[in-house]
Image 1 (cartoon, rainbow over the protein chains, first blue to last red):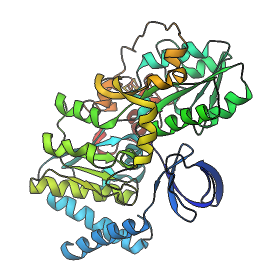
Image 2 (cartoon, chains in turn brown, cyan; image 1 turned 30 degrees about the vertical axis):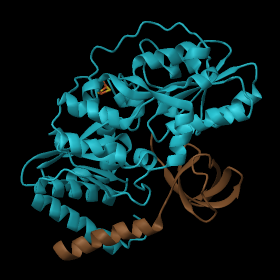
Image 3 (cartoon, rainbow over the protein chains, first blue to last red; image 1 turned 180 degrees about the vertical axis):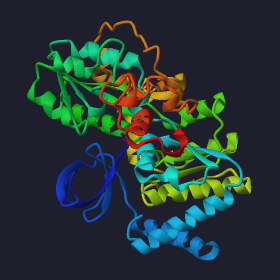
Image 4 (cartoon, rainbow over the protein chains, first blue to last red; image 1 turned 90 degrees about the vertical axis):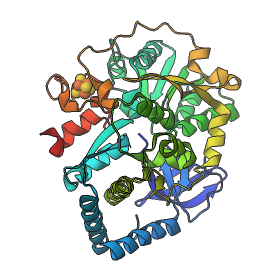
Length: 73
Length: 365
Ligand code: SF4
C-alpha cells in the first residue's frame, strides 16, 4: 500500500501540480510538499507528492557502493 | 537507483552477492517490515540470490493485513446504511470480516467506490450532498498524511458530509512490540522506504540503541534490497548495531516535516489493535477533537456485529513472523487469492498472497 512512484513536475498552480509519469500526465496535490518546484522529480503516493527525489543523493549512494565494490570486490 | 548502466548494475549485484556469501558465516534472519518490500523481494527472486545462511521473513508491514476484523465489520455496518457512500482503496474490498466483506456488500447493492486518492472522496461528497461519504482511512505513515490533508481540504471546501474511519497505524511502535515480545529472533531489519520518507531516521534510533538490532532504510529496486541485505550482513558480521540509510535519494534524515505537520494537525497518537498482535500502545492515529465532525466513529454512531475470527487462519502468526504461510493448513487449499480466508491472502502485499503467487522459493522446501 505504501507504493509510491517518481514523477516530474511539469506545471504548478497553487497547491496542485501536473506531473508526468512515464509519458502520462496527472494532477497531484502539493499539500504535503509545499516547496516542490516545476522541473523537480517527486514521489507520488495516493494523489499527493510526498517527497523530492534527490538526484544528487542517488548519485552519491551509487558512487559509495561502486567505491566499495572497487576496493573490496 | 537511477542512471546506472546495465554493466554497473551487474557488477554491483555480483559484489553484493559475493560479500553477503562471504560475510554470512552463521545463520541470520532478516525481517522485511514492509509489504511492498515483500512483493519486490518475490518479484526479483531475491531469496534465490542469497546463501542458505540468510533467511528473509516478512513482518507486519501490510496495512490491509494488520487491520483487524472489527474495523471491517464497522465498515460493513456503515455500508449497509442507505445514506452512506464508502470510498476506499481497492485492497480493502475482499478482506473478509466476521460475516461479510465490502465486496459482498457491494454486490448486495451498497454504494462503495474505489478511489485512487482520498481526495477523490471530496468530489463524490460535493456531488451528492444528501449522502454521507466515509473514507476508509487505512495505511501507515506514508498514507496517513494524505488522509489528514483530505480532512483539511474538506474543511476548506466547507463540506459537511465527508468523514474518515481511521485505522491508521504507526510502524516504529509495532517494531518495538515485536522486539519486546521476542517471539521471533530477528538479527536485522529492512525498514520501509516510503514510511521513512515521511518520518525520517530518528524514530528508528531505538532499534540499535535499545535492542542492539541493526536496521537499514531501503528502497524497492532489487539492487536497493540486495544492497540493504549486504549492509545488514556486514553490520552483523562486525558485531555492530546501527541504523543505515541506503535510500537517501528519497529519505532525508528529517523525513518530511511538512507532511508530519499536516498529520499532527488532524490526528493524534492512540492505542490501536493489530491483527495477530493485539493492542499496541501509541501505535495508531485517532482524529483530534478539533476535527471530530470528520470522524465517522464520533459523528455517526453505528451498531456493529460481534467480531469473530476465522478459527483456522494463521495470518496473525504470519504477521508476527513466527509462522510461514506454508505452515497454515488452509494455504493454497481452502485459502487462495480467489477465495481468501484471511487478510494475508487478500492484499497483493500480503505474505500469503505473495507466497501463493510467486512460489516460496527455497524456504518452502
Ligand atoms: S493461508 Fe489464508 S488462512 Fe492461512 S494464514 Fe494465510 S490468509 Fe490465513
